[in-house]
Length: 222
Length: 302
Image (tube, rainbow over all chains, first blue to last red; front, side, top):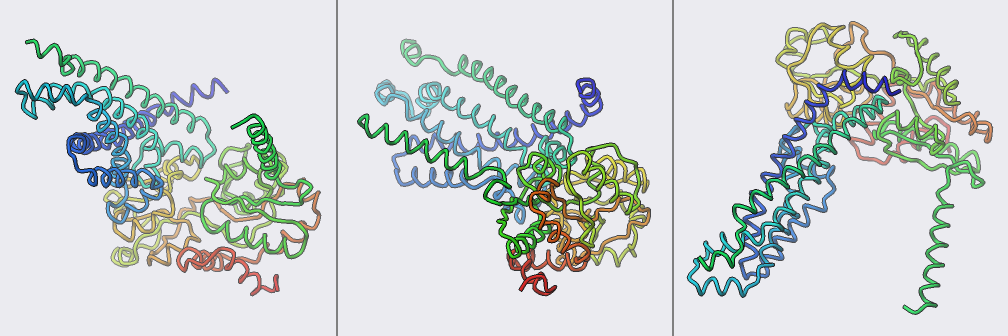
């Protein structure tokens, strides 16, 4: 059985790599779109005083979250057709809530006293955002993004059911032809992708923190 | 919560957990239950409802249907573990690597290998077929067929390089009758393949998102979306005759089943099965109603 598995890998690794590439592409685009939408939205909501708007936006994001993934994919077909487009859109909708919530929480966590002092020292709203709020909120935002990335990579396996390809395709066909090696290998690839992405994002977080995350106290004395 | 309350709560929780676990023991226990497993599409579900009606009418046994098992290999695994005791399976399943087989496309040979192989390996009795097969067929929109004079699969040879094809995900992976083997037999490829859940391919071709699909022959989508199937002129696909399959230990335990299961053998031809699938998938009737109506029309149920 061991020998067979090695042969199997040797035969099929191009397919596994191709599927992993497709899988990563779908996940990456979805998460990027999610970040582009949810981070600015989270910042805006945290700084606004409109409680109704907050509640409304979070309810909508929550709603997307609770729609069962398979159902959502099927519902999107008349709008987007089959293939990568509906998959990316569905995953984008799923990524909204966690990123939004974490961004919002991050900005909420900034001590208003610090902001008031900064205002008193002549910081414009934009400077407050960039040099105080954003650096302090960064750990929250990054943790939201990292969490979402791992989820999205896992959920992307469903995309194969509507023709988007990816590792899910190998898993589903492995089930259909009674080939356990295929199911296991594709799943391991998906896990590896998720762990790798989390690692990479961890490095990105460190770099960003160094560049942007100067302690507010330090910048006051300059 | 004081100690008395938490103690009572703990006892109640334990009792309900134990009861729940007892209730879900595999079928065939003292309660006289038989479980029928089905795949995800309507066809085996309708047949399961037929057997449920027949068995519950003629015996004291209770029938539970376990629907939506992801694929036939999963159904077989469940039967092997005795999580279900009965299912509808298709003879072409022998090519999925359960036991050594002789490569043949002969209908009788394939059936024989299925019956012998699954008996020897798993102790299943693979009965004779219902009377229909549900195999693969290439299908295009009627207007496309008329425009290009398409009757056989070979007629696609020159057009295929510009065509997108929708298929069920597994077909790309199948060794014996999958895409790779197909390109060897027919000698051409398609421009791009879109693997997806089978139920979606019909809408996809009707909406022109793909140009040709690999359909299942008894799916109502062919009729519903006005598609034309192409003849397999090179006899590429093996037979996929559908039969009831039951665990032999179940047949020994409840001998009445030996009389009931054969009631449907030879009773359902392809046109009939497609019609029943149509009632459920397109006219949205419940599989149970459709099954009972069919049995009554055959005089098998009052």
